[in-house]
Length: 177
Image (cartoon, rainbow, N blue to C red; front, top):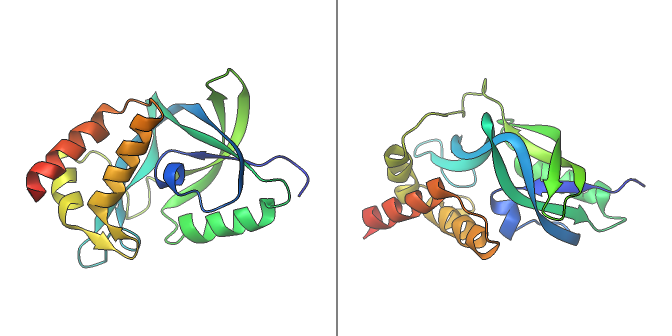
């Protein structure tokens, strides 16, 4: 693969991309909203006690995240690894989205967005309902609350504000004591 491959991360990819990164920068996807709108039955929950993971849901909004330029020569292995990780249950759709970097560049980046027609889609849950699920769910990659905490902390480190995630952190910590 000769073309430059960019990947847009808005959740765990921010702090655990799992592929060789040549460059990273804050970027914005217009027309999308980061939300705990996907039930997790693998990574952060089980079929018996589903967790929630972040997905991009189409909205009249924007999502700030990170654009990663994949190390040249690692494009094919990166695509394979991302597809294995992100398409585990087919609840995500693989899309090429335009993103705007903090320095003003326009890029097209591989991004995983929610399939609203998939059974795992659960958009519209209140933050209180999300917090109750996240506080107790555990999956193959660990506790659901650790995923929330890590994502919120890394967004804060990057200077990316996300009021919903900040509120969820507070609610989950109250539940967990």
